[in-house]
Image 1 (spheres, rainbow, N blue to C red):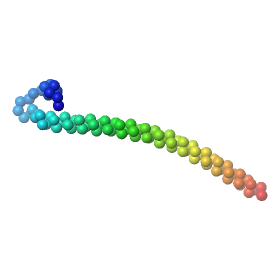
Image 2: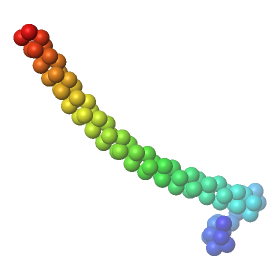
Image 3: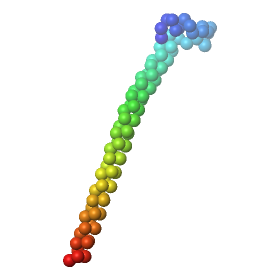
Image 4: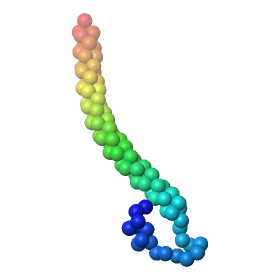
Length: 86
């Protein structure tokens, strides 16, 4: 922790005062939390982008499946009508 920040901390007498080691430990833990938050934000953005891509791909696949189903149904109808005519 910088000296400027330490100088702004209220000074306590006796047991309530944090040692430099405790302040350094707290600063380290806070920095780890900040790093974790940053990583999680980046991961979240990546996951949201992947989700959008997958939703778009899913919609495209659903449309292609429906087109294929319609074509197969049309072929079956034509085959049935050919069979009835023979």
